[in-house]
Amino acid sequence: MEARAVAQPPRSRRRPTPGLDAVILAGGRGSRLGGVSKGDLEVGGRRLIDVALGAAHDAGASRTIVVGAVDVQAPAELIREEPPFGGPAAGLAAALPSVSAPWLLLLACDLPRAPALVELLTEASGRGTAASEVATDGQADADGSPPASTVRAASVHGAPGGGPDGFVVVDSGGRPQWLAGIYRTTALKRALERAAAASGAHGLALRHVLEPLALTRVPDRRGASADIDTPEQLAAERARAAQRARAAQQTITAHGRTQRP
Image (cartoon, rainbow, N blue to C red):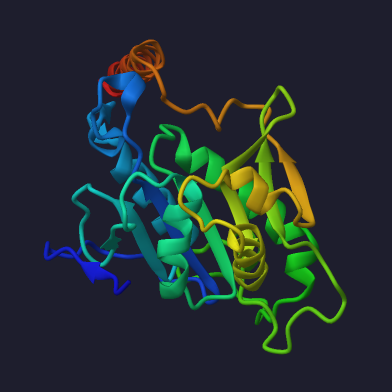
């Protein structure tokens, strides 16, 4: 399926990271939330889809593809899986033909702490085997961050020395969060083809696609992988965001008082 860009004014972008694309899955029914679009839910004054897009932007994704019925701002691209509501594996299958980078950042749209989550992944993948396969010039990025802080392009000759198929976040209970990972695109495509060979990707559990891959597990000790599936979780994240905003405002106010003559 051809990806299309939503015609909205482009925002300023960080210099893209060679070799990294992003896919954000936003095609769920949100049934436990009353059938709402999760991506359109707001936490801390921002839509969840915009939080995820911002995290992909900060990671330096060259291209970001959103799968689902949610408005996004160009240069992000929006596609729909057919038929809709086929699950994460079907959404991934719809997006993969549009992915050309050797590495793929895969995210769900219901991750209110997506920036911290992506930071975990980029730090881990920058220090792991993937980092030894990439060519860097040793210079900092344009914004001053070191090259190892993000995933660089894999060698054009592939990965002759082996190395992981990707990096996946594991929550405090030891459960892999499949929709919070950086994966080798070729490995993803092969795994999806194998898993979907019998009955297709519609309704296929993403775990069955990704579990066979050789993945480096990235422990989440900060709760960055917390997602929103229920009204209670949504209320808790909104309360957390409000508390952080109050704390930030108090810090600003206190700082202003100390600066007064």
